[in-house]
Length: 109
Ligand code: FES
Image (cartoon, rainbow, N blue to C red; front, side, top):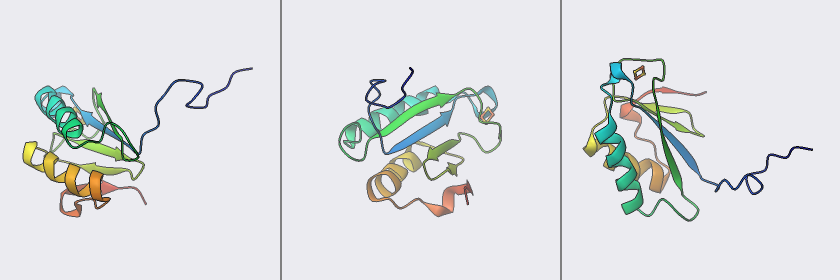
């Protein structure tokens, strides 16, 4: 019988999952992807209760106002990102649970 618990799959639990578009129409944001991964590590969010897992997506299906990032479990979409905004999102949203609503262009619910 197949099981799918995170422990059995050797998947470390995380609080948030941030998916950044690195698709062509959003400018293939590999430098910004590397930046956010480094910034999250510097912020101490790669271990403990507030772990943020970052992954890239080829296209998130929006293709405007890139760079775009969607954050789960909230389902919050940020657009027009840069290093400065990423720093503020890490501090406010990821560390203090306060999304920066001025930069959200879509949210679930
Ligand atoms: S290329 Fe970024 S949403 Fe489509």
